[in-house]
Length: 387
Ligand SMILES: Cc1cc2nc3c(=O)[nH]c(=O)nc-3n(C[C@H](O)[C@H](O)[C@H](O)COP(=O)(O)OP(=O)(O)OC[C@H]3O[C@@H](n4cnc5c(N)ncnc54)[C@H](O)[C@@H]3O)c2cc1C
View 1 (cartoon, rainbow, N blue to C red):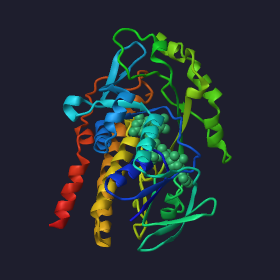
View 2: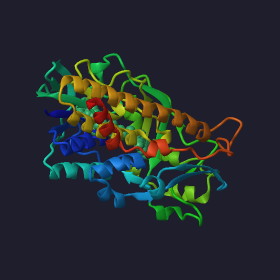
View 3: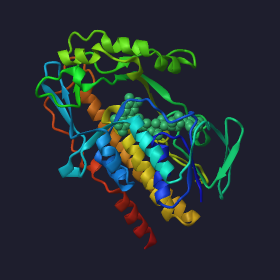
């Protein structure tokens, strides 16, 4: 058994490590020439941190980021509008962790290297050449081919591997983009009593509506235009508190990130007919950013997949295990999409309510999201299917 993984983002690298821990050889192929060194920070919640802990990574990354329990939403006057729990040592065993994406990627790459798992850069996947009951042969854009037992597409929301399963499917731009920048905390001169992270709600909202261009390079040009992103962040901030104005007063261009938001429809299958081509992470289910669960869910995908692949000895077992995996994972993704909707109702600028939502709401109950022990769930599935 050998697994080829397309994409050295967080899904692909974590899958390679999880498979290695199960004694399954894997190679990661990435189209970029080197590890991604940009991309701002992500927030990890206990469900994902438990996965990283099981893989021996949590103790390495815990102190490389910012540990916190709650994300506060405030209006421009400093009144709390809402609170979203992101972790708790007492309740879930882990505090939330805000950490630069490139720190996670570097840690994963180093860990894989130390274990002899290869990540091959400059390898752009092109297409599947042939799939049989024994395995799959696929080609890179330079025309070279590789054969392996399983091919996993961890190549993000615009996945090329997914085209093999869904030739007609495209992504849809939703007309919004996140424009972010990192600045030193000291620059903010944060007043007493302000807890980080905090989202300051403004009647103008936290998103910019951008026009979709008519040509194919639109996305690349929009993302590349960092000057426009900087201008957006720095303009029209008079209504924001002083520390927000301090924050945007000096921003280095290389710290500006622009993320146009795309969606893909709910996918009925995350694997090909012969089950040799599988998609994970954003390639399988792009989750809008409201609940901060995109990468957290990808960690769940790949960890469970590696455990299940290890347990499946026959074609029948593989089929049943993949069906269990996708059903379980889709149910969680669906619940998160519903949570996203609830969060958007509270967070998005709301006509008639300049604060951006109601203020008389209870915190979300998130035990279902943060508590599951995925190893236990797989063990239970395996025990049941043996009996
Ligand atoms: C602004 C922003 C903030 C976010 N914050 C959070 C957060 O706080 N918490 C959270 O959980 N999620 C967050 N997310 C979501 C999260 O970033 C994604 O869910 C996550 O990156 C998905 O990981 P992935 O590995 O599946 O895909 P990607 O990160 O997109 O990685 C895919 C990889 O595949 C490579 N690739 C693509 N095509 C090919 C090819 N043909 N051949 C070879 N390689 C290829 C790409 O170069 C890339 O390295 C955020 C997203 C955005 C945009």
